[in-house]
Amino acid sequence: MAILPPFLAIDPLLQSWLLEDIGRGDRTTQSLFPSGTQQNHAVWIVKESGIVAGLPIAARVFHQLDAAVKFQALVAEGEACQKGEAIATIQGSFDALLTGERVALNLAMRLSGIATMTRQYVEKIADLPTQFVDTRKTTPGLRLLEKYASQVGGAVNHRMGLDDAVMIKDNHIVAAGGIGVAIAKVRSHIPYPLTIEVETESLSQVEEALHHRADIIMLDNMPLQLMKDAVQKIRQSSDRVKIEASGNVSLETIRAIAETGVDFISSSAPMTRSPWLDLSMRFNISQS
Image (cartoon, rainbow, N blue to C red; front, top):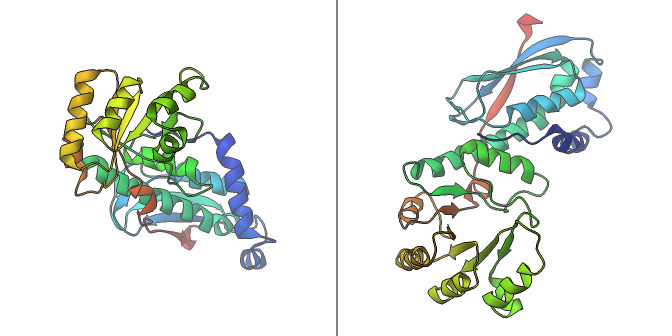
């Protein structure tokens, strides 16, 4: 189950995004509807099928403008919805609903798009023990929420930031002078219980990472047969080391990669390639 980030962390982000959109004031809405003078109902509609994510965050957007707004989700986070389905109702002042509409919808559409594509990847390997993992290729400023949407879609979060865990990548290895040197230097500086992951591209690098007791070994951009050989070598050497596959991961390749026996498959695709899930807000004037 996805864990919603605390509002203590979300609220400053929402406030900054509202300020970006509102600027010196919502000229249209303030001219038509003085603050709090008219109440109305609205409904959110899904305009295409997909996985819904971000409704509690959308509700929080409106609450930043008017704490009296009542936002009721009609579907659970992560639920599959069909085109034309109502997913939420909102009751509140015209000015709060209209001023917050775009920021709230934009966030929910972006997060629902990520959750929708993530679910497609997860379902491809649902009957296998391999887990699908996201990456740090996120939109600056949106990582906290995009990672949440990834969880809603069924993925496991990789590290949130550089301070979460150690990942020794190709450039680290080259600059440090090798995997063994890099692991030794890192291990002398990091606090317990941070894990050490090493990116490898060959069997010799896998052997070196094993020799120096890496906690996680990433098999990066390896052909399937080489990946199978690497998995076999790691399993014969240690039942402690976790194995991650990355690179060339798509909906067409993910199952074959999982069948090599890796523990995790990471991909940035849901973050970097997913289209937004189209949503709209419609007023029900007859109920005002």
